[in-house]
Length: 230
Image (cartoon, rainbow, N blue to C red):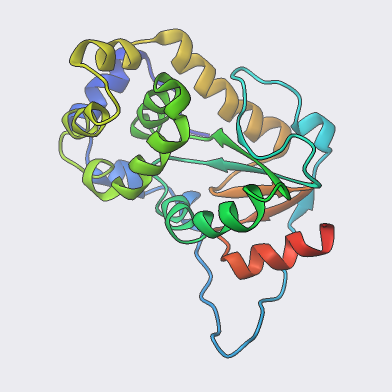
């Protein structure tokens, strides 16, 4: 897996890291978005790549889970994502709004997002989302929607600060967040656990009621998985 860096290195990397650092990982490129055939009335459910013990998956980790939906929903989805993963951004922008409206908001799905950063910029994005408190999911959404503006920027630190100001960050709180060594260690611990215990090697990876699915799925594909479980 990627070599972990100190907090000072994370900050300095944000200021001058080449764009290739963000996009070069073949592991992230494994999450190709699937094109849909408009002539078909519904998509077939993708074949799962494995299974996990949901009790183990849902045990508390280094950070409390950020979740949406009813705790007793019949379907639980755990997504591991990287903030600089283009396929994660594609899922967030194209599939997640419909997933939320159709299943999460109606009490059918419990959705949990977990951090799986592949590089210092992704670590910084997740740290800022955590520092945003109750605005965790809105911050994640904005960072995914504006991914092209910061993930490959020459100076990611400045680009992230401009976005963070919209969430109420000051220069002081922004710097304090990104130099919080405990938080950085916790984000990395979430990733390490995902890799070691649940064999995650690409993003996005979804666990849906114990079955593993890799790649950014369409709402039709997710419906084909979810509906039989309701």
